[in-house]
Image (cartoon, rainbow, N blue to C red; front, side):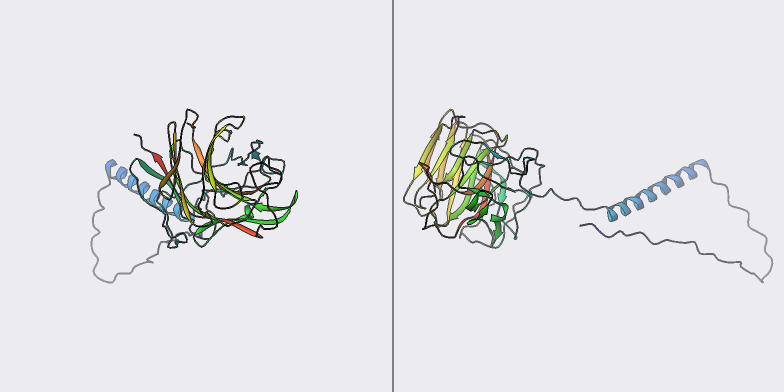
Amino acid sequence: MRNACRTPPTIGRVSAGTARYHGPILLPEPPPPKRGLFHKVVYAVVTVLLFSVAAYGLYKITMPRSGRPSATSVDDGAGTANTTPPFPHSDARPSATGKPAATHPSAPQRDSLNPSGVPMPIGELPGWHQTFTEDFVGDSLNDAWFTYEGQPAGDNGGWFSPSHVAVDGGKLVIRAQKEQTARGPLYVTGGVSNHNVFSQKYGRFDVRFRMDKGVGIAYALLLWPSSDKWPPEIDIIEDNGHDRTNTSATMHYDPDDKKIQRFITKNDFSKWHTATLEWTPGHLVYRLDGKVWATIDSSHVPDEPMDLALQTQAWGCGGTWEACPNSTTPPVVNLEVDWVSLYEWTGP
């Protein structure tokens, strides 16, 4: 928004006219002594200072307010979104290379809404320093995030659209819904990344989420390399779209998609849970609602900066791990995220 231009009122000199005097004639007073060089210098300095202050005030009034760059999907120049990489099990997201950085609020912004029943944490934890929070305040996604668009790599049954990402009722909502796409009618989903403002090596990553039931619509909350060069990839928690009672965590570490995977069962992920990853050198700890459910100790644990991605995806039929939508899949399947709280590791 640009402030209206305000110009100081013009101050004119008022003429006193010609005075008449009818009293006795008085001898004129002697003229005041001429000012010396010192007085002239002081007068000039004061004049310059007053003029500078006035000019700065006018500049502040008329200058436009600076704005942060908008968060939009990235195009590869050929009219389609750039998705990487083309490997079989793809949690790919559009490249953010060249995306200008936005400014994330330095102080956590927590709204008065509490859809999940657990408020977003604010403050330090032993061994962890809070570096990023998102409580999805307001009614639109802020500049910290960009959205996906186009076909996920290696998945002819999926399609990403920014229109399927919304902020509503104090939470992020990523909607899966069948629509016409460039590849025909598909369940269109969405994804977001905080690459615009966040890049960190090691840390703790807490995400409060739930997912509607719906066969063939999978969710993935993951860390992606800030370099945009896959691998590595660390999945904080993801499922394969079969049901919401089983989920997994996967670390990808090789161009041939070598991985270390952990599974958790007998939970209802259509209800709210907090998924946590603690990432330190050579070590991953996975928590669900505060309780450790898996660990990975490996020399392949990534040691490069990564950022956070939240997404859903519909898969084509014929895969060995991912389910595809069928006649039981509801018309709309939503992933909801109440808040995100991220920390950096402060060391042993």
